[in-house]
Length: 327
Image 1: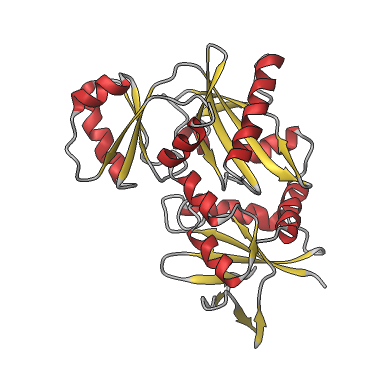
Image 2 (image 1 turned 30 degrees about the vertical axis):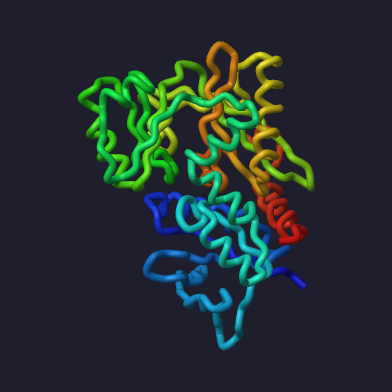
C-alpha cells in the first residue's frame, strides 16, 4: 500500500513565500505512483491541506489528520519544507515526535540548536572549527557602539540570531550605520549576532543522509554583485553561483571533510546546506541551514544536479530515510 506523505510548507516567518515555492517543487517531483502526496499549508491563521484545485481541508491538530470526502486521511511521513519558524527551529517537529509521525528533518533538539546561530557556533567551536569573532546583543540591552566595533571591527555583519534567507542582515561599513542595522535586525528577532567581516571566497555545501550514508554534494562558490549573499543575491539573480566551486583539490578535500564533520557533530539528518568563507585557504564556518531552499533557483537542487542526482531521487531518498529512521 502506498504511504501517505504530507509536504508541509509556509510557516510563520518572513520566509513563508519561499517555503511555499520549495514545497510546491517537492510536490511536483515526488512520484504520485509511488506515494500519495499532499500539500499542507502551515500558516499562522490556518493549517490546511490544499488539493490541486486549491480546495482547502482543515487539519485536525489533535492528530495531524484531515477529512476528504468523508474519509479520514492520516500521514505516514512528513516532508518538512518549512523555512524558519516553526519548521526549521524544531517546534513543529517536537509536535510530530509526540504524535509518533516520522519526518525528513533532524530531531527537534538538533533543529532548535542549529537554528540558533549563537548556540550552533559555540558547539562547533569546541571541536576546533574556525569561526568569525562575534558580539551578542539582546533586545533591551544598552548598545555600546564603540565596544562593538572594538570587538569585531569594521566592516561587520549584523544578523538576527534566529532567521534565514538573509532577512534582517546588514553589512555595516561605517560607525553611523551600526544602529540602523541593529534596528533592522531586531525586526526579525530579539537576539542579534554581530560578526567580523571575513574577506575571502564564500562556499556553500550541501550535505545529506543519502542511502544511509553521509554524502557531501558538489560545492558552490558564491560570487555576488551585492555587498554579500543577501536576499536579492539568493533569489533575484544578483549573484553568480558556480558549481563546482573554483578551488583546488586540496582545499576541496579539506572542506569536504569539515562539512561531513560538522554534520556529524550536530547529529543532523536529512539534508543541510552549510556556509563557509575561505580566508588564506582556511575555511571558517558561518552557519548551517537545516531546511535549505528547494526552489528552482536554490542551491541544493543545483548541487544535486551536479552530482547527477535527480530531484525525484533526492526527495524520494529523504522520505525513505525518514521512514527507516527510529524516532
